[in-house]
Structure formats: C-alpha cells, structure tokens
Length: 122
Image 1 (cartoon, rainbow, N blue to C red):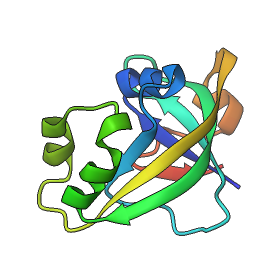
Image 2: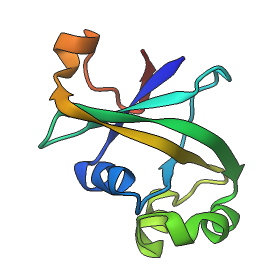
Image 3: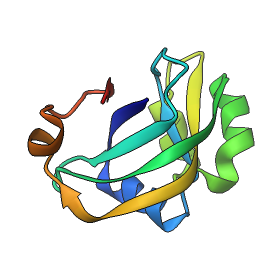
C-alpha cells in the first residue's frame, strides 16, 4: 500500500539526493500496511516526482527524535523545533530505496487527487 505526501520541493530534492533520510510529520497514517511514499513536490513545482520505501517510522517526543535523526534530517535544528512546537510527539519516516521518476507526473491526471494537506492513500 502507498501514501501520497505533500513535501516542499527543497525537502523533496534532499530526499532524492540522499541528504535527507527522514521525513518528519506531526500526524501519520494509521494503516500498518503502508510500505511506500509517493512524493508530491508542492508549490511551485506541483508535480509527483518519485517515491521511496519506508525503512521504519520513529515515534518519540521531539527532543529524542531530533537526537536520533539530526545527522540525516536534511533540515536545521531551528526548523525542526519550530515545526514540532507545542507537540508532545513527532514522527520520522525513515527513507530507503528512493526512485525518482524520469518524468514527473500531474497529480490530477495520474492519481485523480488534489494535493493532500498531510497525506492520502493511493
């Protein structure tokens, strides 16, 4: 099973160049059968650019999550803690086996979806 995640283009690029090995989320999908993330690069790109498999999903309070992921977070400490401000729990999806599409895809044409606020199943 796959989920579609909206990811800012700069962070999506870091996933595909290997410098970002974790995608952070405030909320996560509940279905344990999700094994693959389809990446929708949000504005201004607005295209589905590839996918990756999920190695694991870390769940912890933000300070512990940062300690475990900071070396491969692909973001700054300030950005991380601003993102998780006022949150007791955070999620880090560990990226493995990235596959960048040769040709990016239009979300509405290929998936008949609109960009998700957080995620949607595909």
